[in-house]
Image 1: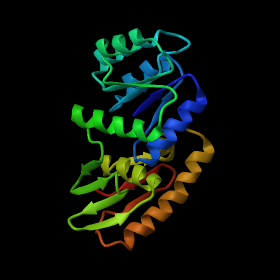
Image 2: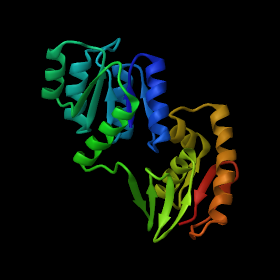
Image 3: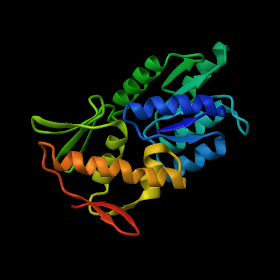
Image 4: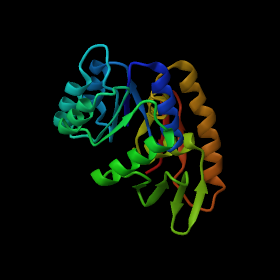
Length: 219
């Protein structure tokens, strides 16, 4: 998921809420950054502000909707009815006016994802189900409760089972940023996750440390 807004505080508030809900979030402060991220990573949904420093947000909405075929929820401080109508005509799937309620934003995002056919609450991979609503790993009738960070880590490891995933890749997936502190923190979270899975009621492949490279979930 991609959050596009030139106000760092707004981006951080929205991103933190969505990460708590189990979504992997990337951030962009300009139209250029947003388009670059969309080309590289193809987000499942974009939360888009219309007031950007380097482009008209409505035109960006039209380009992203056409080029990436990605659902878009516009969150903007505009009070002009014309902007709301234009946003829908140009490809937006929903529209919230600032200030907005975070619960409502999360609910609308879930509704848009369901309508578009993207998974809003559950992700299945390799015979396991990651329940984003319960924040749990599920197999049959058994489940292991996770933290939101553990859920995001396990999501990318399951999706790339059998591959080495570097610490920086994991940090970017979990927090949407890459820095030394974040990549080191990954070790602590994965240590707890490995212990939790090893002692839980569900059998899972081992998460292996590949020294000097990163982590691998055995295929």
